[in-house]
Amino acid sequence: MRLFYEWGTRQVHKYGEELCGDNIAISRQTDWVTLALSDGLGSGVKANILATLTTQIAIRMLEDNLPLGEVVQTLSETLPVCAIRKVAYSTFAIAQFFSEGYARVVEFDSPHAILLRQRRVQQVSYDERTVDGKTIHETVLNLKEGDWVVFVSDGVLNAGIGGAYPLGWGWELAAGYLEKHAHRGLSAEELADKVADAVSELYLGRPGDDVSIVVIKVRHKQVATVFTGPPGRREVDGELAHRFVSRTGRLVVCGGTTAKIVAKHLGQPLEVDLSTITADVPPIARVEGVDLVTEGILTLTQVRDMLRKGEDRRSVQYRNDGAACLLRLLLEVDHTHFIVGQAVNPAHQNPDLPHQLGIRAAVVREIAAELRNLGKEVTLEVI
Picture 1 (cartoon, rainbow, N blue to C red):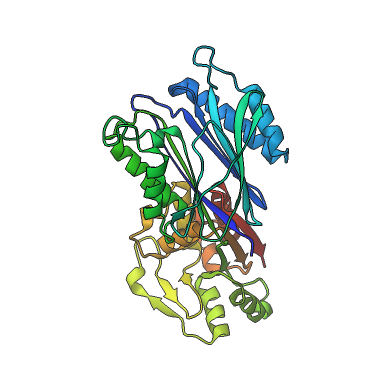
Picture 2: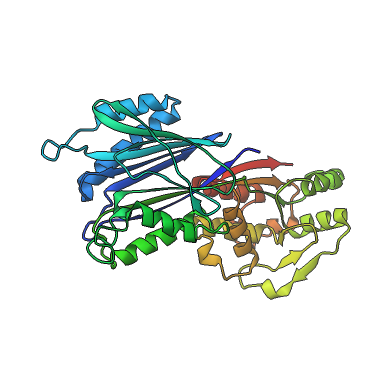
């Protein structure tokens, strides 16, 4: 089965600086994920510009399907060298993670990637080559579901220097911390947050260097199907309900009429949970065989607005209303397929309803756009 790569990032700028002197760029293509992490020399604005230039060159070239070796050659020839310190103005780590289950990693003067399998650090062998006078380290990682790959900048390894760790936290101790905290139930973002919090504590809240963390979690793709609105032709209700419940992954129904269609097909009762009602969101319901059942257009509109405001799983983790439950689910999965029925609900033509409700398909398209902006895969089927 093809692998999926979830990523989480965290950055902390050096104390006293307004910008982080590191830069992270990540992009997802159909069959691979590309990342570039660069550490600009020094800190502040100049370092940030140099690091950003490095990552953007790398990402753009790789998105154009240029060979990794050519990208490295271009970067090596492009990046200037400090005349006084005789070191490059920016370092980099570049990696491409392929859905077939392997990754190619190239590093120049940056900490080696940390590979964890079953919460144990794995030894990684590197090949060395010289490009334009610069020593480049390369490796290919063979990956399995459940693995973690973590990239950090020097600011992580330097944490605690002169204090808790006279020589800094270092690669070994940082890797040991990951062994203890890379629980399977964590998201990539949550693990990146844990590392960043530990680093901040070692710096006593005043980081002496820019800090960047990129966590890649290797797993299988999580998918969901959201069925909202009955189809335009009533005679296909049963066929569509059968197709919906036969899909893999998590199943969501948004809308009372749609829920009745699915419940009838499954031969299960539709039970409304009045404890989940709020002033803005109607209650959720339950149908055995469906993961989440919510009201339709009001709930979808709430979710759209929450996404536009930047709400995330953490901000709604203690809420049990329909909009919060739907938002959490949409942000947890990697691919959402929306099935949108075109039957007109007469209630939505009521002139007393808020104008911003719009029509169902339009709201779903707006939700889809917000999810894509967050790096999610979304497909839309209008029936």
